[in-house]
Image 1 (tube, rainbow, N blue to C red):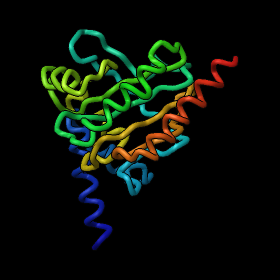
Image 2: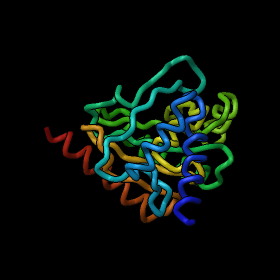
Image 3: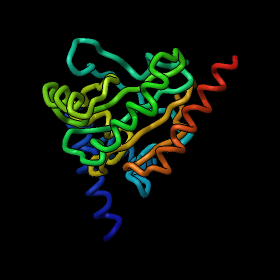
Image 4: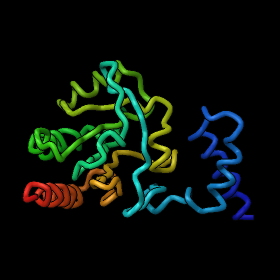
Length: 198
């Protein structure tokens, strides 16, 4: 009975995460169940360190620019930061990302940072960025599709995903823990140091 309930719940979540894909949703959900690719870890992630980071394309808030994760392939570090204005932890973490990471590395050609705002309109995202004082780019995940390619729809934010030059995930964080944040900055610095010595 427990397995049946899990499968039903998983189908519901997959339909929610893939609601704009039309008639293939159920087939995709069943395929995912069969391969166990949608079972979240204890922090809600459905991807793992060592996996290829799922690609996405999204519009940057406040303009017409559209970017894809694959645009950054070859950079030593791509940092993805999942956020939303209703997330209190995000409001604490984002100024730290701005001051400790973005300001230190924004001019480094080997580094990219992309905020990904979950299911909010452009005007809300722009006001949120201004209120938190961040200047790094934030893209719109208007349907939650990007988030759902990394984590269970019901999993929370804030989260950070560090991607290497090959497009593989090297670190993932959840919530804002100062020790974990410090480890993340060390990972970023280490990867960028390797690049700067080449």
